[in-house]
Length: 361
Image 1: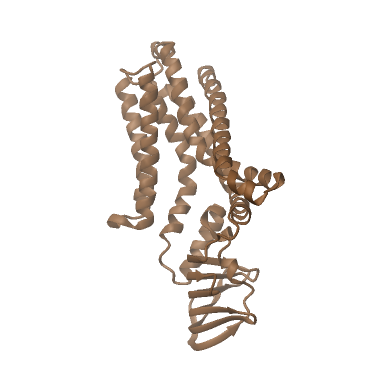
Image 2: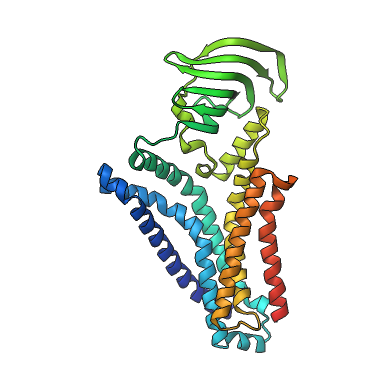
């Protein structure tokens, strides 16, 4: 990295850290005031609050990092333009595209940090956060019905059900896939209904399939009308957040999707979108740096507040486009493959940024 690149990067990083600290502090403060009534009503201890907000910080960090980068890069770009420093760079033969490299480099470093936090800290933090939120802040207000639930046990079994009724302790359309310790399927079971009893799960109207080493069915399917099996899971196991995509690492979620495919479950759009989002979320840090730099250095907006406002406006539009694209992918609208609506906003933002930089050079 050249001396000029280090000069720019050293200006961006402190402002980004400062914006990030402010965003995290404001998020915690707003959340505290939202739960102030529950804190006073249930006499929640300081220790629980401390644990709650410590688990809340990594979640806010991965969400606020791109927005803090957008603001910091736009501000530094505007300040460099106002001081005619980009003009000096251009006089020395440095184009705007070349001048954007330190901003992209900072975004790349931020994306690595976000990916690490999202992989290592966020899954556990989300579980702790959701558990405390349900147990401490929503006592007696927990949900009783859930859709598309799943669970795993210590014997390498994967459970998936279309719906769960906690009050009735009943599952509908239950699929159980058993694996050996090399994660190869060995047995599959389907039951139309599963009712929890003190002696185990009462399975009604189902079929048992035995699977060979290469995933080929062995023997004839074994239908049954009623069967009692003592699986080591209870109804509450399906309502815990441990199996949700946001509480899983990239590798765990990919393995879960593979296992769901082995059971014949095809409605996996939500899980696939979440898998792609674990990669696209860090990428947003690089894209917002480009958008902020391009918006603040265009010919008619160099060094003024209009350029800062343009950068923030494009960043907000980019955020909305990413959310809209993931929503389309989850719902399966317009019959588009999942990859297109998830990746399109990022590709469009990068293309638009380079187009503006070429025109302004």
